[in-house]
Length: 95
Length: 492
Image (tube, rainbow over all chains, first blue to last red; front, side, top):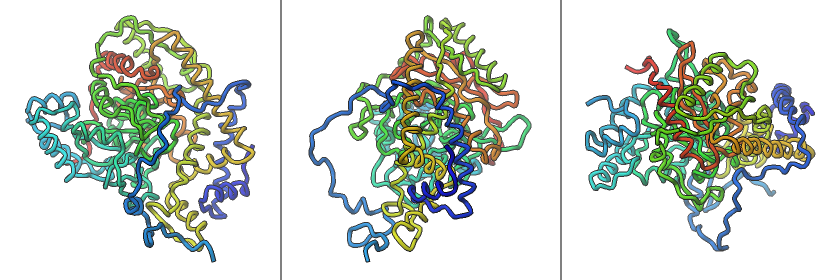
């Protein structure tokens, strides 16, 4: 499996990273080097092996379903690049 | 008064408790040394005023007989930890100006014990790298240079700023984080002790996430005893991290008995990798001999899936990173680069805000998680990961700890590998398997290369077996008797 320019453009769009037309080729090359190298995992027989979901054999802790924090809007907004009337401000989405 | 910056953590603790010097004095000595070592670029932000205030509080704790082992100890904090109101950017451009409104649990634990923050240390951006050349703030220089050379070497990564700071005596100790080797490999390159605890031992709350199933906090220190003292302060259950484990934190220093008689030390044959430099091979054999002389029993073991650990890591870690780093969108914090639509604002912000290696990993991660490839890459890697962890489980039926080299080479030259990502990844060949399995690992300085650069040996322990691991490391450290320091070429 190897990626071409179009695939890189598609992934970059999914990842929301602008990649210019002239960077696509070089990026495809770099990604293919890595993907070719990880390809060696196909040599490993993993029939019947469960995928690891947690390195520690522990059940996730349960807690009571109640609100434990909140009411700090200003602290959350403090680091935002643009704030309007107590909200995060973004470029206009709806015409 | 002798130079307070040369002290180990345990000696500094003893001196502070006896009143030989104050927390303010030892902090001031370090701030002065930091100022003279700017060329190393190991600190991104120095918090002088805060440090002196914390030192005064520590002195009050000591006077009030409330001193803990970390009280008054000046330390560096990796820029990956959120520290309230203080620069916390994981050395990335995309977090420009970010000052958290909260404190990470690990740093809270340290401050509650009276430790003093000197500043935030440089690192590879978002902890992605093995040479500290991927920082938005520029590379860190290793205080160590080859004998009779004036060429700069890398400190390793990603906790390179923390490692360089401790090696240059501009912090007594420092926090690091380790995802695939980011504490142990820089410790090896800088002649230090670096401990990655068991996954779940330290809370990840407030640590800027890279790969959540692997990230773990740990100390970089001058000695094994120092690592034991510092880990005890950092570790512990935290309800804010659902993967932190609720078991008591032992007195790790008390575990250093100096006695390893009967300890079974496993030697994995698969770690004899192709092209391993003879001096690493020789050092490893030396380590085996040292532990044997101390009464340990040496056992040959096999970890058959070792060679698949790195490619597994380079699927799992980028996959998790692509998901974790989705939050950097120019809306909630940090950098925003304008665009003519919301989507283009995201794309421009992320294109300019992330460095090349971070972007590469996000793209790889996005690809391996994308529709049609998830099973072939991600699920496959998670299955191999189960096999790798199974190898260790089987090995620990026969042995107590495992001895390996930490890294396949000594520190390399600045700029030498920066254009070859795959060559860079190979640095973590010996550290990644334990990371994938959640096991604790420690690098102990064991000797010098023929060029006069430090080399480390790694001990890997069992899950939550830090006491046994630290005890074995302490014996290895004593046997190695590594006392070399870098020749000072920086500063006045």
